[in-house]
Length: 322
Image 1: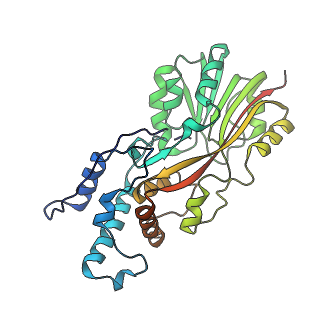
Image 2: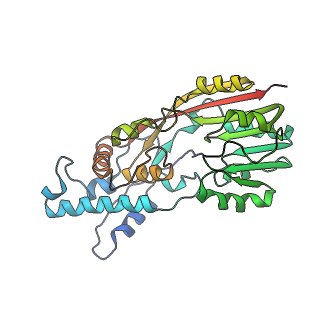
Image 3: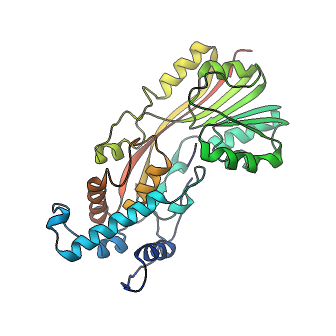
C-alpha cells in the first residue's frame, strides 16, 4: 500500500460564475486548471471566494445565498468521496496534496532494486495494483505477490501477468499464506500488515525482509480535527516494537530507521478523496457524518493556506538466520 511525491508550478485562477453550467462541471474545470508551487504558502481562491460563509452559523440560520454555497460545498465534497480510485496512485491530487516522501532518510525503492540481481525468489506483500512491482522489471524468475484489497486484485493480476507474476488474493483472516516454506530469498513489504512468523517461514535461510511501515501516529491530526477515533487499528506500532517482534521470531536486524514527515493539504476536497482511498484512517468516514468538521477544515485552510499533518514511517531490513 503506498502513496508518491508531488511537484508543481503556480498559476493564478479566476472563476466566473455560470448559471448555465453544472456545479460539478465547474469544479472539474477548476481542478484541471489548478497548478501551484509546493514551496509557497498558498490560498486557493476557488473555494475561498465561491463558498465563503461563517462556520459558527448553522445551515438553517444562513441567508439564502450562503445556504446555497454551503450546499454546493457539501455537494462537491460528496462528488470527491464518490470518485473512483485504483491502487495507491494519488496523481489525481496533484497540486492539492503534497507528501514530502523525498525527505525520508532512506530510499525503499533503491534498496529493493539493489537486492534484486542476487535474488531468485521474490515476494511482494501487498502489491496494491502492481505499479511498483511492475516498475522493478526485470524481476527474479520466481516472483509472487499478495493483495488483500478486492478492488486491486484484478488490476494487479492484469498488470503483472506479462511478467509471469502470480498474484494471490488474501484476507485479514489468513494466518498462513498458500505458499511453500523457504521459497523466497527476498520478501518486500511497503505499508502492508504482516505476520512475522509467516515471513520467517517463507524465507530461505539467510533471506532478507525489507519493509517500510506506516506507524501508529500517522496523520493523527486528521483524526483529532475530525473528532474521530485515534487508534487507527495499529496497536503499538513503531520501529522498536517491530524490531522486537522480528528478533523474537529469529531475525537479525540489519538496518532500522524511523521518521515523521510533513504532508500538506491545500483544499478540503483533497482530504475527502484521500480519506476515502485509505479507509483505515477514519473507518466510519463519510461526508454526511463529518460534514460540520469538514466545513471547519475548509475555513481553516482558507485562513492558513493549507493543512499540515505528520506522516509516520519506519524502515527495517532484517535477515533470517543462516
